[in-house]
Amino acid sequence: MSKLFTMLPFVLWCSLAFAEDFIPANFRTGSHSLESNIRFPKNTPDGILVIKCAGYVLANGRLSLKVFYESPNKHRKSVRRFQRAIAVASRWIKLTPASVNGERKEVWFNFSVVFRKFGDKQTIEVYPSHLYDIDKYEKTYTDPQRYGFNNWPRGCGQFTFFVSADVDSTGKASDAKVIVGSAPSRCERKIVDFIENNSYIPATHNGEYVTAKYVEIFFD
Image 1 (cartoon, rainbow, N blue to C red):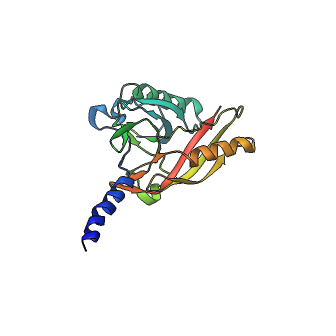
Image 2: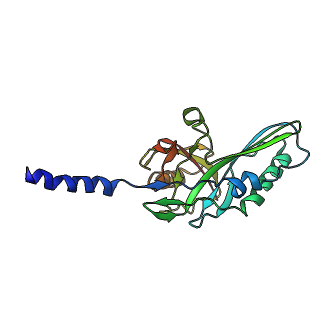
Image 3: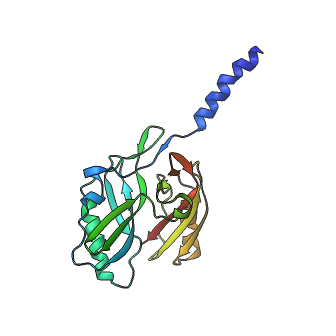
């Protein structure tokens, strides 16, 4: 019996040692929020426009915006006005930084900005995801966030394509594949390996870690 009681704390310690504590980067609210700092472009038609964006959230909470994922061919100039409004606002805000086991991490951060205009009513909504899992988690979830930068794929020549993967509730990526674009097979393999063998903060929904889709763009 004494041996059993001696082993129990050891088993408990092992369980805790392997359980990682993730806190994803996320937007702040109020006057420090992204939406309150975006100026809605003037003289725009009625409708809804969703712009998917990505960049690094640094360990100090600064957002380094790097890319807009989609720009419809139709009304491209108008879309660029919205993109510029996001880019300008992103320079002045700070997010809650990501951390793993209490250590702040720089992460690749996907987010969406939704502009709505109907008559005199204009609204801006910002979400810390690309909304691929909206049917499962509605809008109240964060995308997985990559904080690993091991073996960055280089030397592939000129290319642009999107890679998707499933990231589970422990932060492990699987089933990575190119979903848009093409590149030499050796280059695709490099990027798939990069995605599957890096570290992620899992998606969160209602305070729980959940499995979700992760999409990242690669270009050279």
